[in-house]
Image (cartoon, rainbow, N blue to C red; front, side, top):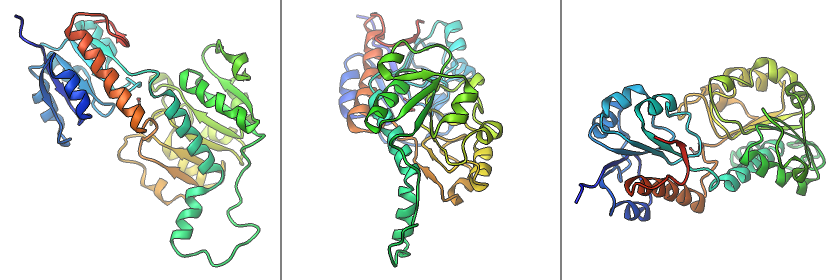
Length: 321
Ligand code: DGY
């Protein structure tokens, strides 16, 4: 009988996921969720045939060079900008991700941030918790309407569509900008516009596009200046799509009304000036963090690994190997 392939699971996963993987692999799993320095990751990965990584693990040429046996990388995320796909393809390493299972939860989170930002939920809560609420007033924490306004979506993939679908309940006009026209545009009641129109007309702009060199700082000082001064911006996609330094300046100067951010450049570190800006809602990359979604993501990554071990086609490949 052939030896089982060796798998490294870099982050703590649900016990059911370990149970699913255990019959197929010789496992090294970081179930204590230790914060491995890069050198530890490289050393632990060195003799592995497969890796189960998270979006915070950089799978680059350095790591691949350290892993001569590596044949499969499964990421427990839909985003795969942390993986050098070209390098994996060159080496014949298969890569999988976790699409679909987090779409609805992530769209919910976009709305949580949109509503909290527009209606100043966290800002007013901090004020209340600080014991500053002495009396009610007509002009306390006036925010922006959400119902009946224009929702702009940059990037109309699965999550963008799910965000757009929810806008119906708020009687919103939906406009979007995308590389191509969305096939479900009519069903969504959404209108494709150019980027300049999107920026100029959106009352609430949600970013849902993958990160790549081409989308680096797609929202910078110029784009922020082109938005309505009453607009809100929501980023549930990836840090680096927004120029965080330019955003701080725009928020401070009142060039836009507020921002809801789940992702940051260089996270988990973030521009400390963001912490001092009141009109921003900050969450620690929890877009997909519901119990069922995170379980489904981890299980789908495991299903891909099991398929690899069994020599079967991967359920959700991004590179064939
Ligand atoms: C994803 O799946 O890409 C989410 O951002 C979690 O990392």
